[in-house]
Image (cartoon, rainbow, N blue to C red; front, side, top):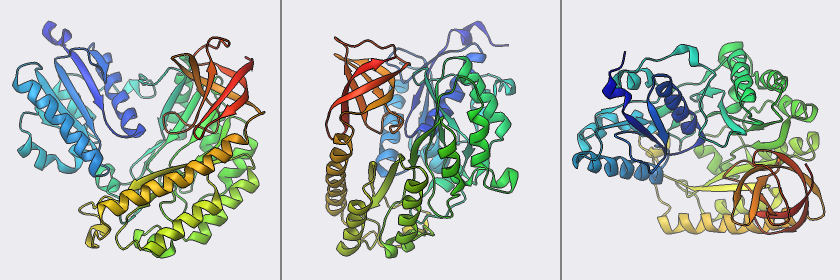
Length: 437
C-alpha cells in the first residue's frame, strides 16, 4: 500500500515521437491512475515526478528526446522536481550511454519495461487493466496497437533494435479493447503497428489482418476503422477485398514505400521493386476505387544519385498519391545502411525533400479541387477560432487534410459525424457547410 506522501505525488508523462509511443504513454497513465496517482499528460501544470517517453527514430527525434531529458534534469538539479524517469525507444537503444551523460535521471527503462518503471514508483502492474486504456486523444478516436516490433531488415531502420521482433496481440484481446473504447464513446479506431500486414503470422501462422478487421467490424459503436503502417512487400491483397466489403473500414491506407528507384530500393533492402509497388497501388485502386493512399518517402539515402531521385519524382507524378510525407535519411549506427557512406550532403537532402513536397502540393491541390461540389461524411475533432475542424475517411489525425466549416453559420458537436457539402479547397484543406447531422 502506498504512503500518504506517494498519494500526493503528481506525475507528468511527456510523450515524444509517434502514435505508437502515445499508446505506450496511455498504458503508463492507466496503470498509474489505477495505483491512485494523480497523472497528467504533456502538461505545463506543475508535477513533482516526470516520465519522459522518448523517440529514437532519426537524428532530429533523438535530439528532441535528449533536449527534453536535459531540460527536466536541470529542473531536478534545481530542486523543482523530485524524480525523473526516462523510457521509450531512445532509452532502450542508448541506456548505458544516457546513464553516463545524464546521471540526474533516477532510472532509465526500455520499451518493454513498464512493470519495472511502475515498481520504481512503488506501483503494482495490474494485469486486469489490459484493454482498458486511458486516452490522451480526443474521446472519439483511439490508436490501437495490434502488434509490437518488426521482423523486417530495411537497411536504414533502427526500429527492430528498439522494439524487437514482431509480436502480435490476439484478436480476442483487440476486440475486448475495441468494445471498451466503444463503451466510452470512441467512434474511430486507428490500427497501428511497426508492420501492419505481418499481423498474425506468429500467433496464427498466417497473415490474419482480414480476420481481425472482420472481428472489429462487429463491435457496436465503432464506425470507422483506419489502417496505418503497411509494408508493400508480399502485401496480403485480400485486405482490399475486406475493405471493399466492410463499410466500417475507411477507404484509406498508409503504406510507406520509401523510394521508387529499383537500385535505391535494393540498397534499402526493401524486398520490392518499382513495378511491384505500382501494380500493388493499381490493384488497390481497382478493388477499392475510392481509396486514398498515404505514403512516405526517404530521400538522401547513401548513393542516391540525381537520376535515382528523378525516378522517385517521376513515380510520384505518375501515381498521384493522395497524401505524401518525406523524411531525410539519418545515418543510424548498427543498421546495415550504416556500412554505406553517407555521401548525400545535408543541403541536397533538404532540397530533395522540399522538391517532393512542392510536387505533392500541386497534386493535393488537384485532388482537393475535385472534391468541390461533393458531400462528404466528416468526423469533427475540435473547434479552432471561427471554424469547426474535422476529417473525412480519407484523412488521419494530425498528418492529413482537414475540413473546416464556419462556426458562425454551422453547428456541430465535437466527436460527431456530419454530412458536409464542400464549397472551396486549398492545397491541404477543404471548406464546406453542414447539410445534415
